[in-house]
Length: 344
Image (cartoon, rainbow, N blue to C red; front, side):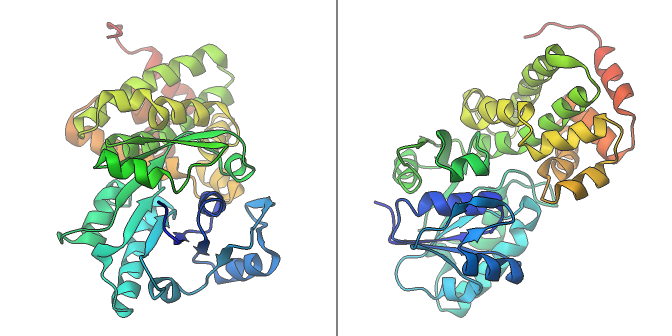
């Protein structure tokens, strides 16, 4: 059974969409974010006008400006984490401090994270949770990740969506999935937390690649090839990190990859489109005005592939274009000039 109350940490587009989704199943949902001015506006107008202007807040969704209030709430504490991946470590440190100040045990709280990327040190969200929040203690609360092909605006408007929730224990994953499951949102359960997290991170980089290709005018054939070979890259390194190959053929792998590579709602694809058309990555990100995970994930992915000696030619070219100033046209040419080999 879902808890009576859940707090969502992160009031961007995805955090707000998840809060709206949870509010359909849970009696009390609280939404917290870093920007106090933004929070005050949301609390007054009962809508996130900046990111989801068409999705009004129901009465049981409340905006909370003070994290200490969330930490001191009565009953079992449950949190859904949706900050940008680079801010996850800092957010967890603040939440842990608030819980300890309120006399609550962080190890007893339930955490489900929805971040899709790596932190500044190249670690997946689950690794950051273990380091910052759990610190080797005996965890009795839930630890899980939710991911899959989902644009915040469509989820908030109750359009059909399918996601995967992964927890180390499959039975616990099935129970936690009930927090989010509605008539329009189907939640599948899994126990491959590494694979689900890795798929959600890598698809951002591959979406940048697809956007660059389309920005250069290379067409649908090239986009399909990038998606297919990108999936092969994702699977190779994901398995090397401990994920399972079958996870990458599911919603958190190929499902999310197709979505972000083919629709302009994707901020990562839009970054690639702008770069392919000759704009600087920095200017495109500024114009988008929200976190573009692929910009930073590309560096972490490059470092991981080198460390594990796994070839990721598409991701490597994205890294060179975004962080080394390489010409996108030459990056495509470099991919096409690679020695032919078996597809297997």
